[in-house]
Length: 396
Image (cartoon, rainbow, N blue to C red; front, side):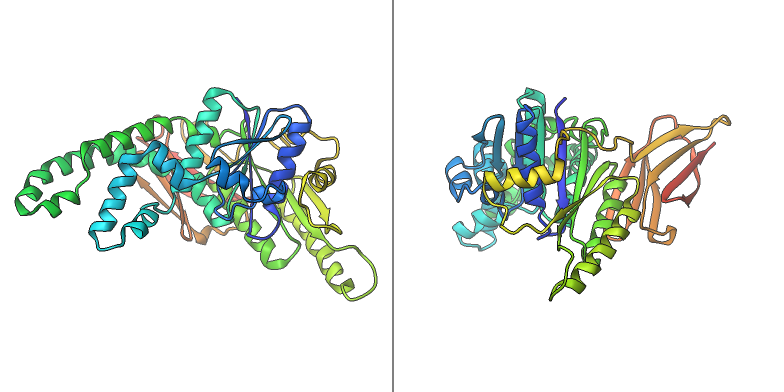
């Protein structure tokens, strides 16, 4: 099983640079490495000073840039045309029928979340093919990255609960739509659409468990030593824990040097924030990187940056591999779920049961935890927050 490293953080903190340097360092260690970006900003090619050729010439496919190192920037439109024409054309036809210009309709037909789905499918394929030893995911800014890690669960839920029902409903409606008008019929997807969806879900099989396996996947959070950025990093850490993904490192980027002059007070404030960050995230290892004198663009600067970040460490190592959640059985026969939920109070958490799922909601984010068979018949007895962990108890 290849090592999967997600690099995430607030926009502008330097996460693409950290992802590129992680990939470069892994390749130097002899690992067959892919750095895969599904951030629509397409900054990965800029980090390696590739210009526009990576995205425009390779059309979303991997490109070898150094020994053991491939880069890939997702091109959603090319991917839809290559692999899911039935879904793409139905969506575009639906938009055109609604009065949109045909060219605009083709753009709008790429719905939100498509880049997440394409990245997950590529990731699952590379794992199955055993093409790479290390896959580094350059994630988009925090909220989109969180959507990515929850996307596989959402698709799995739809495949299990709704797909067959929707297909049956469309079959029942199609004769009635034909009686009304041809345009009414065109709004209903045909069997090829549902067949394509079914194939899509089959190709996603196992990805959810792989992302939540602490012996395969971890996330590395990049932050700057500024109060607003640190707060967002805390929230990201909590949400990744909520989705069952282990954070094995926090990177503080762009620390100003200590000294006299205009930035002296700013540098002191950064040092204070850095101290707080190490306390907030303990025992997760925290790395500190200075603001460099040159922009980190090109392999020479990435080499320098990767040395500062990892020195002689192998970036493919797990700096922490403790799972963020787990079920335990008590001597009484009762069970409990323990889930890391730092930086959040009990009052901010909403819990509910829906069939075999425990639904955890914090703010606008929601996670469905599939309960083991032994727990499904049990009632939820209560929940509490204990040392930054949510503990949910189940009893007969």
